[in-house]
Length: 330
Image 1 (cartoon, rainbow, N blue to C red):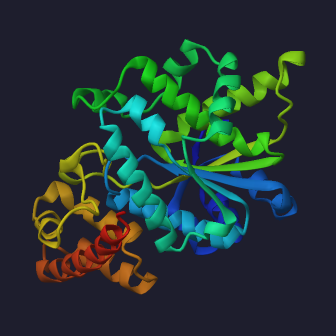
Image 2: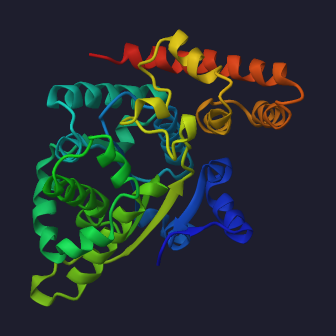
């Protein structure tokens, strides 16, 4: 089934299973059966991050959400930093990908990810490379053309994409990531990502269905694949998403405090909704502080000083995360 916006009854059902973490998600795709308490012992969670650059506020929000989700579900989790995938799909030097990958590993643990309960790895994983090679037979070029990244043209316009084959190879690695728990005996898998990456779930489900009907050419994988999609943090200056690959769209953890302040404290009206979203999702503030931020945003034209105070506090707290990020560099 396709990803759908969560209606009030669905939000209530997800909240029963995830608590306050449920507010981080806007869409789902067959997630409720996977999250049912009766199947908790046979479920696994998969998520991942691209190491093309330092985490943006959007990436930070997903990282914080993944840590919260792990604590809430207490289920096996695989977290992938997709070095080899990014090498194929983005125009970024390998040395940069390796450096950012290792820094992301350390940063996720610093944020609270339970290393002992997590398969934290990259795409330089023999089992996943073999899995990608085995599942390629179930997908066609037309499948990749139909199910692809929604921002592909935007990235192409900025000269960020690798070759067409490279983009497909990246997708194969990631589909193999999503299906990895089935290969290792799980019966229910929850994929968590941004909504713009829902196509990976679609491709993984095609593989799961086609191999199940392939007789002697099947892989013996059986189970239910569901997905939850994090709220997409819109970009500064009117961009649809805060992207590591489009610097003007984002604030990120390699910025100095002054650089963060220049962007967040700008009065550019096109950036204000994105700043509020960054506060809601990546600040780590409690519910009362976030409610106050929303109120200041809503009244920013009549009472600009309150909104400036909120943004200044966020600059300070985001720069604290940036300091932790820098300390994680090897």
